[in-house]
Image (cartoon, rainbow over all chains, first blue to last red; front, side, top):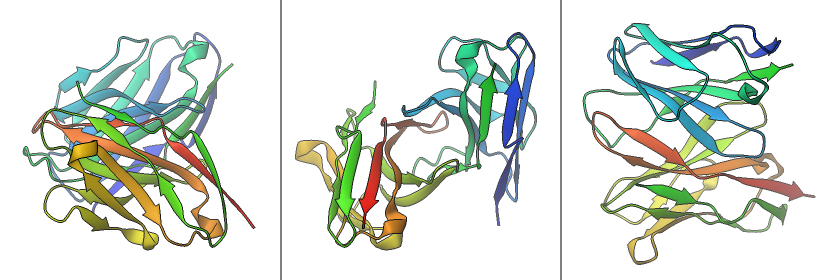
Length: 115
Length: 114
């Protein structure tokens, strides 16, 4: 069966420090991968998605970047964190190959607090 | 562009009472619709989904949703709420093929009182 791992679960970082959140998927190949951010009291905002290795699409201009160095690995990064980067970050995957009638599966999330 | 609206930010319901959460979408073609639930500090779990066919879909935990094209709605219902149903609920619409994206509503927080 497929599983998705996201870490760390909680992170407190000072303003101006770098960030690296990692997400890996097991039990499938060539998945579509997604990074969402959930700010307090708000819905989920799609930040990045990837349909293949090295292919990253950005949905909103921001202080963050994403990379996909391996098929089942998706990394969210920042060189210098801002206070506004605080939030709950969720990684998700869904089967690739252009089949729209499948749902996305989510990791357990990372709570990032920038202080 | 597609969008999802959940008009109710917060709903309080008594245990054992019925629950209905509203969802309206804006999309030109037939959408792929989902309801997810999120417990505090957790990821999202799929409750149910609609792609085609019967417009009344059954999900896990006793939830159901009805797709109404004429109203562009996909409301979630449960006949009798349990205290464990207290959570945040998200409606989502999926669009595209290989560049598939899920757009989420802002969510509805459900509080269950004894």
